[in-house]
Image (cartoon, helix red, strand yellow):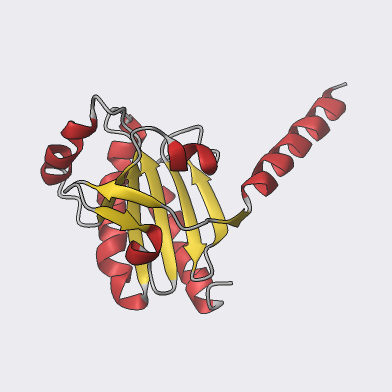
Length: 165
C-alpha cells in the first residue's frame, strides 16, 4: 500500500511539473509607475527570471535580496529579473514604497487581478520561472528557502552554458 501511495505521489508530481512546461505568451501589465509594459519589452536578451510574489509573503521577502544580487550579477550576461506582484487592487499602492524600502533594483509589474498569474497556473508564492529567449519555460521553482539563491544561480549558469536550451 505504501509503495502504491509513493508511486501515485510521484506521478502527481511529474504531471504537475510537466503541466508547467511550455511557453509564455507576450502579455501587458502596468509597472509600479503606472506605465504599461509588454513582457517582450522587459525580458532578458538570453534568459528571464520571473518572480511571482506578494508583499505579505514571508518567503518572498527572503528572496528579494537574492534576486537583487542575481539581477546585478547577471544583467551583463543577458539575464533580467522581472517581478510580478500579485497583491490585490486594494494593496497595489503599497508596492512602490515597498520596492524602495527593500531596494528592489529590477522591473516590477503589477497583476492585481491575477490575469497572468492564473494563465501560468501560479498557486503559491514565490513562484519563479526561468524563461529563454524563445519564451519557453525552462525551469520552475516554488517557495524560497536557504540555499535557493545558489540553486537559481546554478540553473542560470547551466542554461547560459547550454545557450538557453
